[in-house]
Length: 193
Image 1: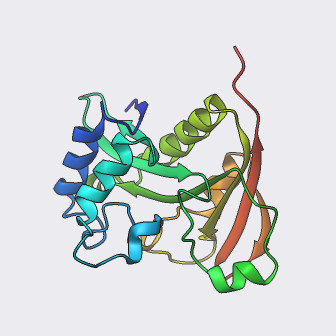
Image 2: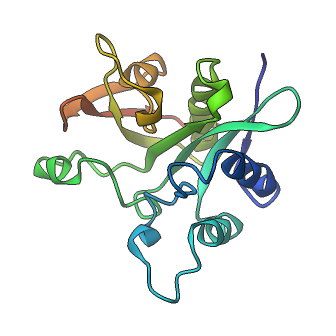
């Protein structure tokens, strides 16, 4: 199957929302808000994850590479953004003990429709995110991901993808921050015409 990658923006919001709704809100209703600053806000002024995500997307404060199949249906994504846009990270305490240089971009989560896992959607999403980052000027890109080689790692727990997938895209391991978690990084050059 071939895939088309498009940025998450106002023109693709409906396809993103349909994918999330088709998959019961993603991870218990997260709507891919778990790494944004609003993740802990739950007072009366908080509009809820769907509305908060839509507002971020329409304001250009949420980024993702959306993967569309041949029928133009979104089947997955890779979320990325600046550290200010995505300040929440896994393994924060261990990360901060010897924090690497501040990245220009973070890749924080992936999602693939349950019926399309193992079909290259995450691989396409990461490639698309790196292309979108290059088009936005490039820079140092960081992720915290899980090593899967030599162990059984259920897909539903790999919302940050695998270290091996990142390595296939040229990322290198910086430092281990959890039992199976590593900081990985890569410098992406700017996309110059």
